[in-house]
Length: 197
Image 1 (tube, rainbow, N blue to C red):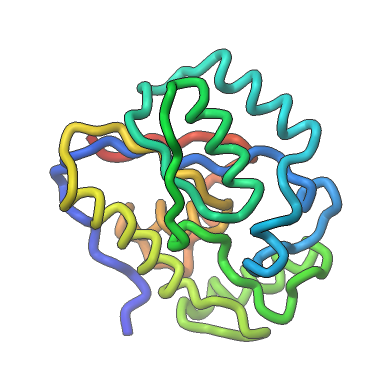
Image 2 (cartoon, rainbow, N blue to C red):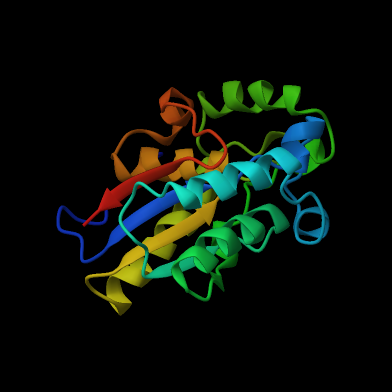
C-alpha cells in the first residue's frame, strides 16, 4: 500500500483554515493525551492557551470563517468556541479530526513522541505500541475535506484539530510520502494554516 494519498484536486471549491488547538493542559504537563476517554472531558486549554486564543481572535489575520468544525477533545472544543464566538458561528463536531491515537503511550511523557516519529519515518503503516498508522490518520483527515468539498462551495471552513493529524494532512495534501510528515514545519499551538480556495 502506498504511503501517499492523492491530493483532492488542483481546484478547490472552498477555503480551509487548519488550526491547531491552543496551548493545553496536556502541553503544560508534558503528557500524551490521545484517547477520547481522557481527552473529551479533560485536559482543556491551559491559562496560557486561553490568553493565546483571546489575543488570536482579537487580532484575527485570516479570512473570516463561515463554518467552524472541530475535534471533540476538550482542548479543540474550547479553541473552536473562542473563534466561533468571535464570528457569531455555531461550531460543529467531526470526530475524524481527533488526535492521533498513541496507543500504549497514552498518559506517558511527551518525550516519547520522537520514538514514534522515528518509526513513522520508516513506515506509514506501522502500529508499534498500538499507535494509529499514518495512513489511517491521513485518510480520515482528508475525508473531512472531501466531504465539505462535495457539500458546499465558496465557504471558508475552519478545521480545529491537533498537531500530528494536521501535519499528516498537510503532508498528504502536498502529495508527499506520509513518512515525511515530521519534515513539515512544526505547527505551534493556536497556529492557523490556509489551504485551498
